[in-house]
Image (cartoon, rainbow, N blue to C red; front, side, top):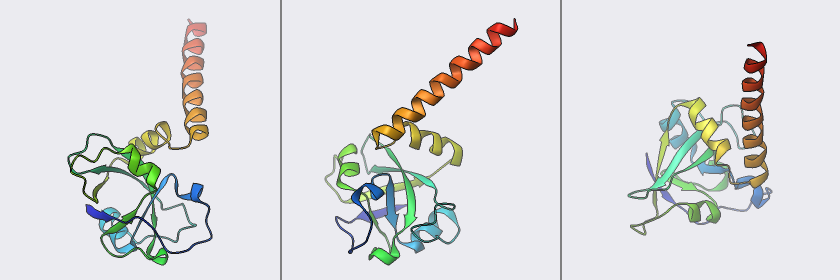
Length: 143
């Protein structure tokens, strides 16, 4: 799905860090991507991960989707933070991004592996590496 990237959203009570790992889209677009109605911005049970890229761009980022209709995001618009925009290469200098839904578990893994916040990324990677080491050591000790 292609949507237009907007630079700002209406006033809100959330810190800027709250939006670091999220993409805000209109609830109508959420339904078009996932086939179900979006929950509010504070409910994360139904929030899913999508792949975001610019048309013709090589870099891709993974962000959690939340409904942003209550923050002034219109149909076929989306908002990601300026830091997220900087992670993407934009060869055509357009403001149209491509949002792709994919395998829920794979995108969740990639979202955490490439998370925009260092603390989340570091804890996840250390946990995966230590988990693999424990499996290897456990299988060696059995033999």
